Image 1: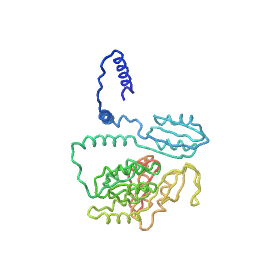
Image 2: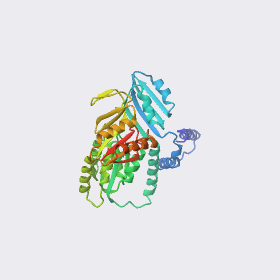
Image 3: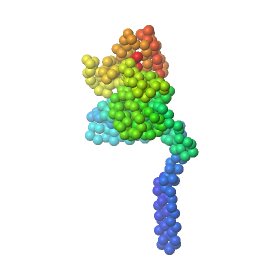
Length: 365
């Protein structure tokens, strides 16, 4: 609404004046849905992603007795715009648009623990919106796409990881991960947009498998959920796909592939803890594999190297690293070089993942 309702108010006054004068009032039929849809589509199609100054919509709830919401507001103002901070009884909710969500969360962690985290890529959302608008325009003029045999849906966090999934032929990427789990509705919407006889879903997170299975039960299409618990498992399953095989044969191959890969993640601790006889302090770098804490320390490369050493065995052939948004390419290449020297008989591959929160995702095969 360009005038926020002012035009409607003027029309009401004009009608009242006409009634007082005794003039005839002409009632016009207006197709509101068409006008609104057209104006919205125009707005969506004329807004460029270049206009989005801060890329990530970041929301979190901080539990803290150390700081007031006013101080958090002052701190967060340096990281972006569209800031909203609300505090009540030791709980502070923060919303901010920023280009550095990792730094924002690190700053908050200085004062307490994070109860919830949500990060959305607004440029990616906008691009998807534009695609939806263009798709809507083309639906009336273009014939329906011919139904194909297989379709693929994957959950991913990070631009780099999403691009790798697309290179594997995935039709639809649902943005989500450890701290922002997609809903059953998200999967249903993705299924609706894929014209295929058999649709494989790769949740890539143990917390998301249930939502994927619920979508399978609700859909009238043939849905196959491969219960991938992390991104490396998702890639390992997709590598085995063979378009010449049947649905059941591909499913069997993918399920077998899940056991062929060991996976690890390198992130940071949000609180003090002791696990597997490892003493961890808040803010430490930690290495996790198969849900177990295996390494901790003050330096990302050291923790990552120690974690990989515990995953590698005599049968290991490939180590794959996916570096996140808080790691530079030069830093990742330095780590790769040191790993190649440490594991001379193993191939070390490096890819940009762009994932938040995790410095590295690791695949050992």
